[in-house]
Length: 340
Image 1 (cartoon, rainbow, N blue to C red):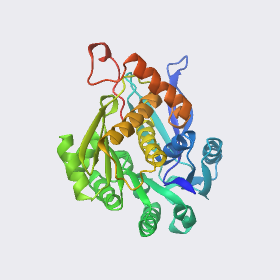
Image 2: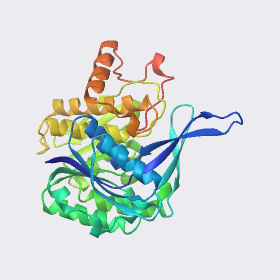
Image 3: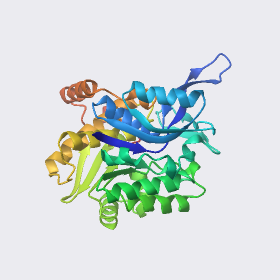
Image 4: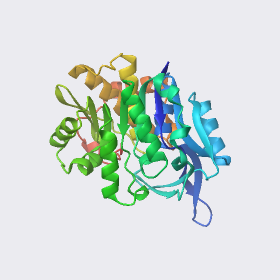
């Protein structure tokens, strides 16, 4: 049985690592793409995972597949295209915040078609996880919707992280429309505070979370706020857990690590009925926050994902040192908020 199958993009992130003697940035290639990041994180935690997507028949495409395999992710659902593998160039400021430029006109991840989907992978999985980037264009948009319909018809838990990247959409109006389409299938949704406001038009998290949860009849909603912490909205209302202050080096993949941590906890605790008590929700948020903070301390998404023993040691060390925060303390004000 597969614990989580994810459908969507895999691509190469080029992350700056210093400059050369002329002052130009030195770029390091790191495998990435949100669904791939999530699966690697889950695999490192001991879960069985499988990827559905499309990559280019080029060096970067081969590197992506071998990286997933090396991390324990099954790649039976990956198809190949003559279109080149998508490249993302990551820009990181002095606080660890990142922005992106994409070479994807088109990119191989967009070429996934409905005929490429191995539906047995979905039928043998407990959870189907998707993002919104596969909804930006055809044929991957149609493939995503068909996979979602199949998963819903077969009573699979559907997890959705919009992972909004405005540069990949023709307009934010189109982005919102297609994100809302996927939202109608989802049982579990993870959004950043900015994405929550984008979708609902409401800045106040308690009000926006309630609206999103009710509007789409969700079973579980996560709202992440980086270093400040995260919220969960379930059948008993809103729960908050403060985050962990770290010196962020690269926030790429932090949100993916968070949702992977949350899904891991749900699977480990056998809570896929999503009937979760408040105290358990707090424990899930604590683990997700720790996953995001751990990844922020390192460069790259996939290379930064911790093993179970590493994240347990990290959580224990922070509990002992009192790094769990209830606000931004004076000594932490220089610590960068982790954008997850």
